[in-house]
Length: 236
Ligand SMILES: O=C[C@H](O)[C@H](O)[C@H](O)COP(=O)(O)O
Image (cartoon, rainbow, N blue to C red; front, side, top):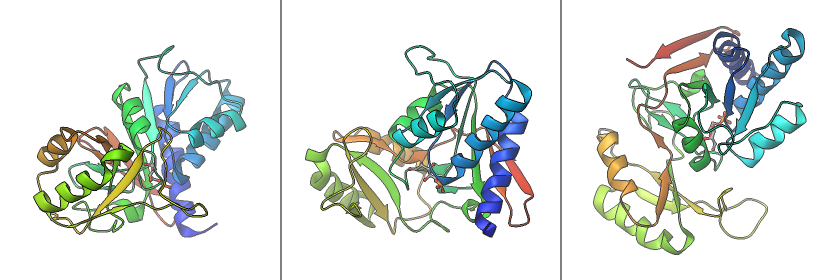
């Protein structure tokens, strides 16, 4: 296993072992790190007869839950969750996150907002002082397809940097999210920005469905290290 995967697995196991209890309704995030969390959850369910129900945050998460024979539920049946376990593309020193590198952010944010606790699992490369220190692919912004050009122009004019439409791989045209929208990636932004203010301003722009900025939503982050150990950071 690569160092990165060893680290992802360590963070995922720590989160599942420390936070999941029998009876929990759990939000299942998206991405490659969450795969290790679902594996560990399935292991605990079979070994400890742990009773849990899972709310997926994406098509990928739903498939993962189904493949591991974990009980599925949704926000209509369980609008309040005990915990949501999810990955991140970057975590800053204030526990602000960039998410959506894999195209999932809207459903992740909704499920996280319904959870008592958002637990982030990530490898050591995601642990930053400031957003943009290490993650260079930009801040994902989910937009209604008809609005992508006006939003692109408005963000560049107001805040600078470069905003690009995310293009699909193995399909002509843009990435379409699980909710049928486009994704803009905002790169080369000013890192000393007040993310809370900017996020609020972005969310007020008609056409922006949501942003990959998760401001002060996470309760704790687990960062796996290359040797299989981990460290954690809690929200102050
Ligand atoms: O769109 C994807 C999600 O926000 C992921 O949670 C995030 O990109 C982290 O994914 P990974 O665990 O693969 O680094």
